Image (cartoon, rainbow, N blue to C red):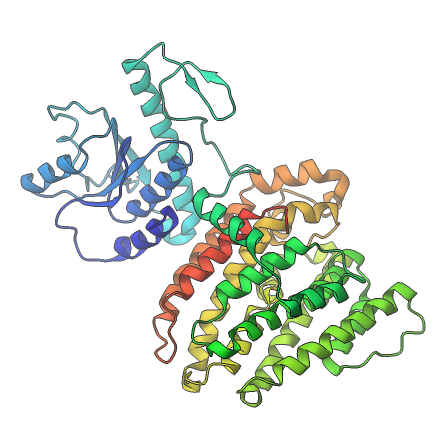
Length: 506
């Protein structure tokens, strides 16, 4: 299992009310051990993930106050590490709760340096992952200090060469100290090997003859490169429901890529040009399959309309072929209307940035991912699905769509500054929290905008939302019986990796 998956398995364990009868290794590691229980176990795993990308392998052990035999087992579980950090819950009234065995490891014959770190968990229920992340950062900083101290004791004059080529007079396994929120080249603690895997698969993705022909049509007016369509091909193949009839699977994946081409045409008009008249005309074309009166439009706009009509007709001809098209056609039409509404909102927002707010962003913008309509295309080719489970299925896809939106947001907001597109939720949240003013939202203020987004924790807020939707998705897919969704959760995690792996490239 990847580091990312390790975090998820802990989530269930720490919410259980059953007592831990003995220490349990939640995550393997060789350099340091973090001992925690209850809600702090998840904090420990999150900290271990951050430590991992800094060159420190952290073992996470779940342990409570137990009998002497279990205390001995806790000591055994921590064998081989150079230092131990014990997390204690500080309830703000009587100091720490004393839930962890604190003396045995420190006084063992191995004399492993041990430190106890009290952490406040009172705000966990109120702030959820925001509070956990702050505690994880505190754990990381403490282990930095602890391991650097150990390194100085063991080898006070040894030098370490970091990844940037700099020489540090320390034997600490840390290459750089983490403080604050991720930098541009950071990946929020997700395993680099998983991201690289997706990059390799994207580069090797081949466009089918159909997609190649549509790409040529799109390129008459659009500017997006082949790499984006390789990205879309891989994403469509990855996230298409496994129960789709094999004879229709390739057809459905290609139709989704075609749908994205249409979306990109509309999206670029809504976000960059702010041409509301053209946007309305293009949406009428997609909905009614005809070009409205465009005598007052430029030649370039009319050409864009003709390309939109051509691609839209191909899309309609394809979806009409699906076995259950008649069953779900009204639902597909509804899903497409939600996407169009998102485009209208984006156009409206970029004309008046005073409208920026997080609530409407989270209500409208997820539909820009088009995953609800994609799932409806899947259903059109999945005859074994029981329609009585449609509500549960739609709930699952909604959470997956929100996860996808967060991935898109984290990977595109920087380039959107130069494009004068400020519909991203990070800008809305920065304005609402007073870290930015509406007047600052222009490309000339790019450095200040980036600093405000990162220092204000606005990327981290949406990453936390991704975790929340991921946990909900895990619950929802388990409630569906007529469709095999065993790999669906993993596919959505990998879809998120695709976004992070291509930050600034899509």
